[in-house]
Length: 278
Length: 251
Image 1 (cartoon, chains in turn purple, blue):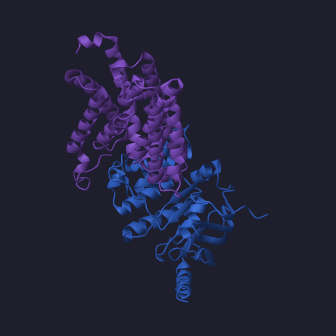
Image 2 (cartoon, helix red, strand yellow):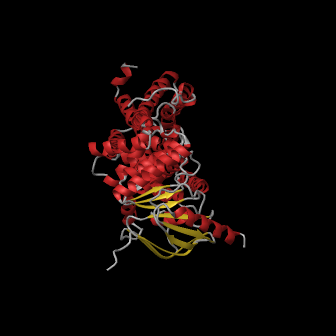
Image 3 (tube, rainbow over the protein chains, first blue to last red):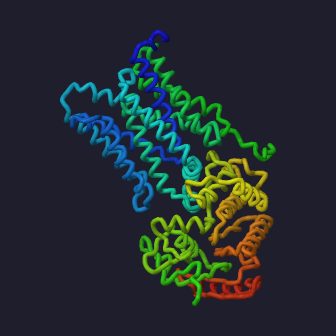
C-alpha cells in the first residue's frame, strides 16, 4: 500500500478523498441537523444532470454540475419555505425532473462515453490535479465562511424560526448553506460519482450526529468520518479489487452503524441526576 | 405634537386560504406600555403578534413598528429590537445546541455578524439565566429541558436581545405556579427598569404582571374591547371582558 502511494494517481486519490470527504461531511451536517436530507438528494442529482449536460455540450462537467446544483438550490429554497406546495412533494418532483434530464442526456450521447459512466460511479483513481485544486478551494472557502459565521450558522441550523425571530437573517443563511451544499457536491462528483455522492454527504454527518451535542465537535467528527470513509474505502477497494466509489459509500454506512450502536443519545439522558459544570 | 407610537396598526387585514385572521384591526401602543391581549381561540391574537414582527404579511392596511414597516431589511431591523416568544417551541432532543448557546442567539441578532459578544454580553446573559433560575442548566442540551424550562429559555433568549418591545404569546401557559411567578416577576422588573413595551397574549387572567394597564380583547379577527385601567386593577376588567366574550360566543 505504501508502495502504491508513490504513484501520482494514488496521491491524487488520497488528496481527493481528504478534500471531498471533509467537504461532504461538513455540508452534510447542515442537512442532517435541519432534517433536510432530501434537499441533499435533489441537489446531488441536479449536479449529476449538470455534469452530463456539460459533457454533452462539450464544456467542463464540473462547471455544468455547479450551475445545475446552484439552480436547484435556488429553486428548492423557496419551495421548502412556502406553504402553498408540500415541500416533500415539490422536492420529489424536482428530483424526478433532474433524474429525467440526466437519463435523457445519457440517451442523446454517442454510445460508449466512459466519462459519462464515470460520473455515475465516480473515478477517484483518475481524478485530475485540477479537480483536486477545485476541491481544496471550495473546502477552504466553506471552512472560512463557517469560521466567520459559526454562531449564526449554528443558530439557524438548530432552530431557524428562533434565529429569525432574534433578528438573524435566517433565510439568507439557509440559502447560503444550500448553495454551499450544491457547490460541494458538484466539485466532489468526479471522485465519488452522481449515484453515490449523496451517501457520502449524509452518512458521515448522520454518524457524527449520533455522538455529540457539541456543534463544533459535530462538524469536526463529520469531516473526519468523511475522510476516513474515503481512505478506508480506497484501501479496501484496492485489497478487494472492487469499485472505489461503492466501497467508500459502504464504509461510511458501516461507520454510521457503529455510531448508532455506541451513541450516547440512544441512552436515557442522565441530566437529572448528574450535576452540571459551570 | 404626539410622539409616534412604538406600534401602530391601521385597518390591518390578514387573510389566507379563504380564512380571515385579522379583519380590519386598528391598534396604537405607546412606548413603555404593558398591554394584555385576550380573546378566545382563533380570535387573531397570535396573528397580530406575527404581523408585528414580520412573520405574517398584511393583505391590506398598514403596520408601523418602531417607525418602520415590516418588509425587506426593515423586518430584520425590527426583529432585532422586538423580542418574540412563540406559543410553542418544539425542540429535537438530540439537537446540538445547549441552553446558553440558544440564549446567546438573542445577542447575535442584536450585534449583527460583524461584532462579537463582549464580556459584558456574556455577563448579561448569565444574569438573565440566574434571574430565571436557569443558570444551573446552562450547559444542558436545549432538547433535554422540561416544557417550563424551555419556555423560560425562550424568554431568556428574548431578554438577551435587550428589546424595546416584547411580544409574548401565552408565556405562562401550562406552567406551574412557581414558573409563572418567576416569569411575571422578571417581566415586571424589565418593564419597570428598562421601560420595555410588553404585548402579552394570555387566557389566564391571573397570569399577568401588575404593570399591565390596558386590556385589548379580540374576537373573530377584530378588536371587540379596548380598556385602560390602573396598574394591577386589570383583573376585574378582564373578568368582565371574558364574561362579555362568552356572551358573544353563546349568541
